[in-house]
Image (cartoon, rainbow, N blue to C red; front, side, top):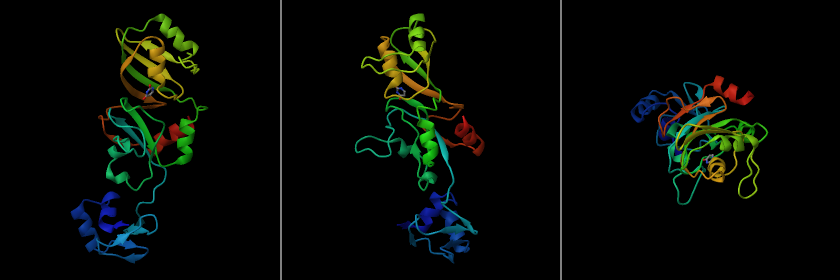
Length: 233
Ligand code: URA
């Protein structure tokens, strides 16, 4: 149960003082009845709240793109670590967002969230082979033999077989890595198998989506057009 005024703020109806005015002017109904008392308790899963007759908190498919900073685990909850959920702004509190795949605690960059279970499963399905591009800083320098090994499909130290991937050396200790699957610690393990320990990793692209100018730690909501692109591709 939560207060009506807090619910209205979290849904983006306005600031605390704006919400006070909105309530006073009788623009809010709960289960069809006008409600002016902001302290009234409600269950957002059960009670239907409308502003000017429009339902609040009822959402269709939402996809959010985050520029994840290091230091957060990709999980919906964790007993000891900070999670990526803590970086979602309050307006997403009533949207049941889940991370699409995962980035390691130390990895930065592009991470998607969605409330659409079907879309989530399609995006992480190995069948989809969505391209993911990573920038890596690492020990040593990648050479032609490493590029070939990535292109052939590597076998990791524990016997895991990887799909063919693209390694683009960028000079001493820097490379771009493109993979088409999402195995546990995949890029770090592929680089380690070639003797190049990764010291920094950032995901820069997933399918057609890039980080653009989104600052680290910030999120932006995808447009319907962008959702269409990632759903079809
Ligand atoms: N590969 C990794 O090793 N770590 C990530 O976070 C993502 C891909």
